[in-house]
View (cartoon, rainbow, N blue to C red):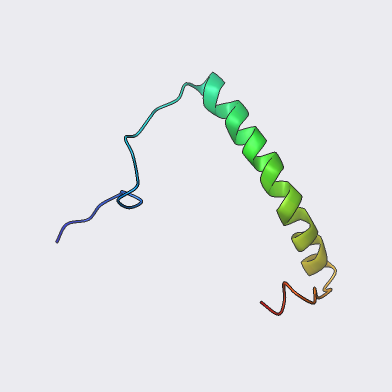
Length: 56
């Protein structure tokens, strides 16, 4: 049996970035993700339901 770490056929070659390049990218990604995650987490912590998100 063969196992692959590939994400699928569209995955390209692996590029290793230096810390000074990936760290700002990681921080920017975390900031973008927080815009969507923080309201969700706040509602869950307050035990409030969202009419659409909790339906889906």
